[in-house]
Image (cartoon, rainbow, N blue to C red; front, side, top):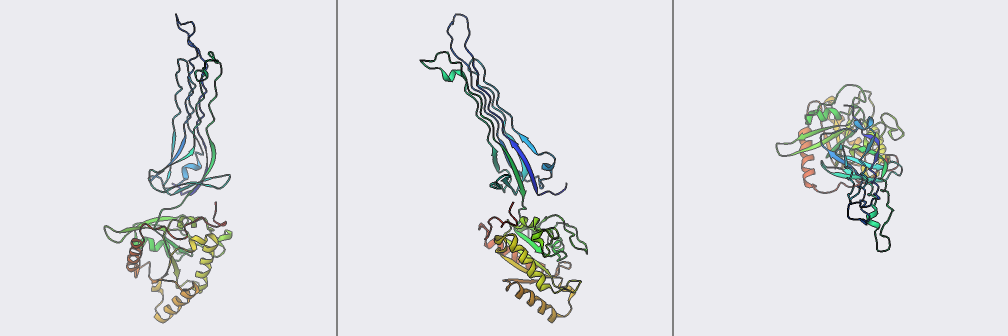
Length: 353
């Protein structure tokens, strides 16, 4: 199924049924009085997080969702049947916005979580409700209230502990293949990764974490260059970012200014995401035989990034250095279990919905 992480839908709750105007008519009871029942309540629309769904592609086809309206009231004080609620399954990790205002309505993170997005209308009152000592034969009733209708924007963000950040061909997908069972496409040309991907990294039988790979960024991504910053939202739930840098680009470019430019694009997208814990991972060290030259380049990248707190040297293709990296990541995550990631607020205007 094609990966889709944005969709707009229209939801319509059911209308309340109208109340009934009726009078009791039975033999030997000449003045039976009013007996019109109330209308039934309209059904509501709920979004429900479902682990079996991993894309919003279905919402590109079916965009309208309507709950059932309530039935009218009837004689003999019979209340109309209430309309059934409508539950719409969405992927876990879906954020729901009001399309007109951009207001965040809810965030469905865990499987089974439910969000009310359109409240059903209330049933109208039958004429028995208007009976009084001064109004013994009321002929009035009320119609049901209309159900809520709303245009919603759905945004899917992947649920991962660690996110991979880097330029095209930095080796993000290769690293994900090396340390997990995920099999993203790998090739020797830019933008091999066109959609985000997830992999479960198992340190041992009892310890594991989820890693997210997104398409590479290039300078000018905030203005739409390359694939733009569209997929950066998938890193917003991560607790830790791994900034992969190709230390030996095939075109001979200096990796230091390229790495600095990528961080600039990240800051333009979201100051909160840029403030997230970020480790420097120098990749493709197997392509440099001169150890002194390798260290010179690593130090230049580290200084360009303002002095990274942690620096790892790996070869994603051979696996060199990856075991230490994933072990340290697992320990770091366990030490901070239960904490909210810093800077986890909304993106700036460039990344806002």
